[in-house]
Length: 87
Length: 182
Picture 1 (cartoon, each protein chain N blue to C red):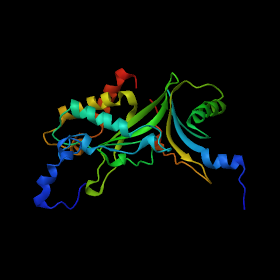
Picture 2 (cartoon, helix red, strand yellow; picture 1 turned 60 degrees about the vertical axis):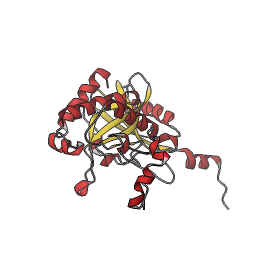
Picture 3 (cartoon, rainbow over the protein chains, first blue to last red; picture 1 turned 45 degrees about the horizontal axis):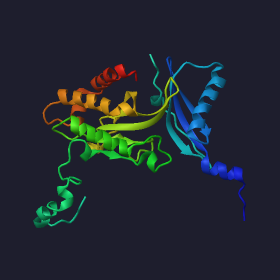
Picture 4 (cartoon, chains in turn orange, brown; picture 1 turned 180 degrees about the vertical axis):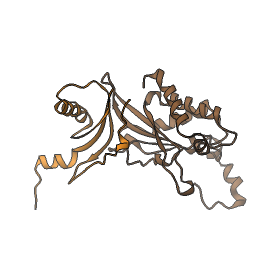
């Protein structure tokens, strides 16, 4: 018999994988986030963008397109048609 | 759908109270009779936005505001799993959750046009632009008013789309969205 600890249960029940598209004046940036809920996922987008670009971007909007429960695994395919280069 | 009604009892069935009070009709209006929605955030934890009640409100509004000689098949779905099958609709609405420049969280929708199940089927194509939920009924009204003014008599949305292509529809949507700042 196996006894689940709280962290395993928490991971199994409530973690999601999120697919965002971040729009700036220059381009659209796909961002993938793992988080417990929508609010934390949106907050993590800002964190990851700043870490990646080493500055705060001038963001037009952040759009959540999809979320999936993470159990053993989860993923997204990002097609080039998902991203529109702004002119 | 009510199956297996004998021909000679159809009139009697239609005389029943449920058909007389308007809750069910065999002659639905252009929009509400052909609308499809997933259950949305009300019962689905993968949905990103509310869909079912919003669709009902929108199509009732459109049926009040616009009279068309053809039905328009509008489908709405709250996430890419697409229980609302927006890909095969004349006008498919895909829900997204958006944080705007001023950090406001809003339900929003993208419009896809030209889907069908006829002749082997074809998925609709996305128009650029995200529409905030609160403005969606107004945008769709203007968009469909343009369809009404530029279509041929008896022409369906699919036939219209095949005749004019996606560019005029994108141009019209851009024109509608510009004063909204979308």
